[in-house]
Length: 317
Image (cartoon, rainbow, N blue to C red; front, side, top):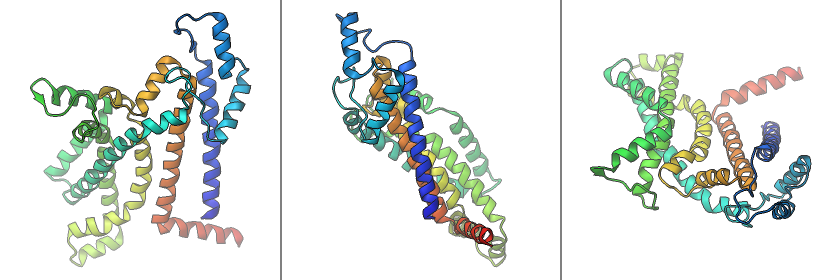
């Protein structure tokens, strides 16, 4: 297990460094210039600004310098949004809002999706199961920004002004963004829970338990769901990454001052350090969530560990 963790950590670090290299190369290679819209700008002033922020050096030198700073957890300073402000500071100020939004969205998705999936497995083939699958199929097809726009039109304007149209930090202002962001994970998690529970109900020991008179509800919630936890834990990792990183458009729709808004404004103003820093930060979140999901699924499923031990002994023999 220790060897596996070390291998995965090494792969994660290499992947993060590769993302950083690509982010620097792509942002610097994109057409345009961060100083084009600066008032009273001239070629001489542009050269001075490039020299100050290291944009006049060759691209390989810029990549090497950025990687060296990244190893020291330095993501650079903003060129345009808040000139001279560290990107680390911008992330520290804006990410908590995005994190709360993502965690609330994933929380209601888990609390609603897992029980609904189990309940649909209990009532397989009945009206509830058919309606459940239809709703999950529809919810899984709708992108979060479309759901956000529909909710904004329906519940924030016109006759029904139930929720605030713009984010103000109150509890009510979290409801619609969290619902829009959590609908797709909820539908996906509910469908996967139903499929995993039904698959485990076909195993021999659960059939034997059913033959001994154990109720179907107890079979589902007490035994089949427990056996379905490892694949569900592995599924939660990318969902958590999606919830933390996928709220950019939703934040724009509801005017939420989160990390997504910072990245969108940085792209509009060609603020290279902010674009690269936020990209690297989000990549680190995704890689970390996937690594944590793999480790949790391995810890929750003893069959994986037993299979590895068997392979190790077989190789030694």
